[in-house]
Amino acid sequence: MNDTEKKIGLKGLTLNELEEYFISIGESKFRAKQLFNWMYNHISTDFGEMQNISKELRSKLSSEASLVTLKLETVQDSPSTGTKKYLFSTYDGKKIESVVIPDKERNTLCISTQVGCPLDCKFCATGLMGYKRNLTAGEITDQYLLTAREYGKENITNIVFMGMGEPLLNYENTLKSIEIFTHELTKGLSRKRITVSTAGIANKIMDLAERDLRVKLAFSLHSAFEETRSQIMPINKKYSLKENIDALKIYAKKTRTRITFEYTMLKGLNDGAKDIKALIALCSSLPSKINIIPFNSIRHMNPGGISAELEPTPLKRIHEFADALRNNNITVMIRETQGDDIAAACGQLAIKNS
Ligand code: SF4
Image 1 (cartoon, rainbow, N blue to C red):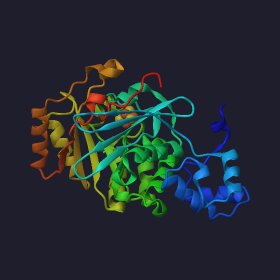
Image 2: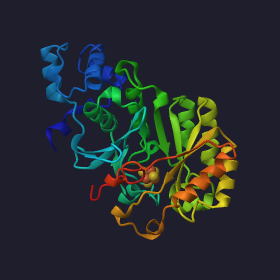
Image 3: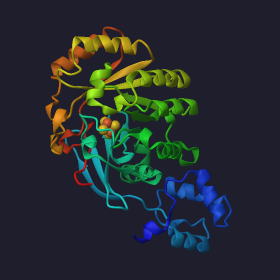
Image 4: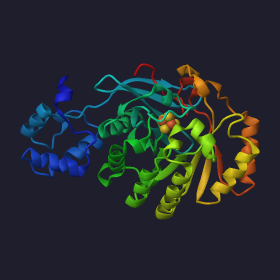
């Protein structure tokens, strides 16, 4: 156990939690706002810099608390698209990745919520890694802060919880990080600029709807048929598509937002005429749009079983598929593959032996 592990980690604490912390060490709770500002606006990791906090308190904090969670190991650039992949190590030697994806009017940060993922989706490299542990709220928050330090906080305009892991299986820490990202004191992002992506944890979708959090929700659909979906996404056996769609309808109604259906196109598996028909029926039942994702190779993880057999739908077919949906008044985007030259594209994040 190193020094950092023995200290209380303050990064990732919400304002209320920081107030409780200061009260617990016999200090005034207004200190919480000062520290909140230093941690999340100035991205400070050194109590010594915090000049509006007394020297005695700074020294007390230095001896018992820590502001360090992740260590930035490497940054890889994709020369063709400008996508950047950040590799971080955790206090216990695990590795996680985040990606910044530049676009015309925005820069989107894709962050991870778990080391690996327990859900084993067959088209996803992270699923092939297996599951190690949930990230702490501090580790989730730090992916934003450390990339913002490199990139400029004002230049990160959107955050998507679409990196490694299922955010709704690390629910409390995901919620805490959203609270920090959007807090008025952090001059944070609007909730409309945050998207949580889920493979389908129906009870948590219901809970999100009740909290009226108003972040955008993306649902990893990949097939509108229960059987095919269970084949490529084992979580569908626990929370069926029907259960999830019922929850998404409630979420869309309560928050007055549109659900994004993520749809990775897999040759011969979900790209036929019957799939178009099923998608039309599904999309007509709730406010939604479809994000089509060309399948990105996961060969760098040496997949076996059904994962090894998956092939991408040819581009021509992807366009026919999208046009058929558009002709039925469905909003469809085809996501450009960004960063597959550095294994940073959708579904490719994975670290061997993490
Ligand atoms: S697609 Fe998402 S939920 Fe599925 S295995 Fe990959 S990281 Fe996990």
